[in-house]
Image (cartoon, rainbow, N blue to C red; front, top):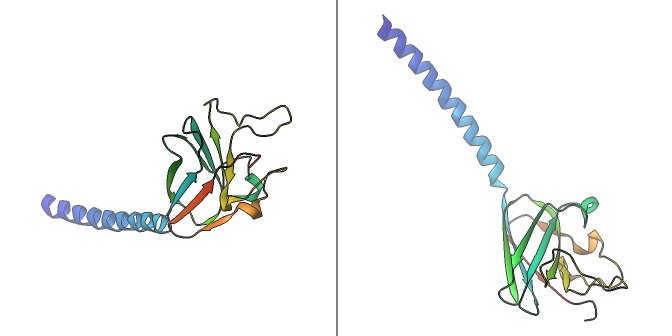
Length: 155
């Protein structure tokens, strides 16, 4: 009798776990199915020293205020690459600057003009104002590669 009850319980629990586990793996697959990879290439780094600070934004109301992802990359050549995995589909914008002296700040002169080179997605040139979201945004709906060229204010 015990053996028959044990087999019934084992079978029932096994079937329940199989359905439950199958349900969770299906949900996990649904979440990762739309994940994308974004490769950001920052070019035009001169001189080859310091760091490049890169921020990825995902909403107009957060542009230049609150980044979605950000990183600091050591400069070893005139180009650095940042690979961001599991990026949801949507609109994004990038801001980057060359932190030549590694002080964590975008240094400015007494007039407020940037001393270090900077750049934005779509290679928007910003001279007397920060670029608007509509100028820098791009769509991620698959694996995407974006190039951002750093330039000084007076270039």
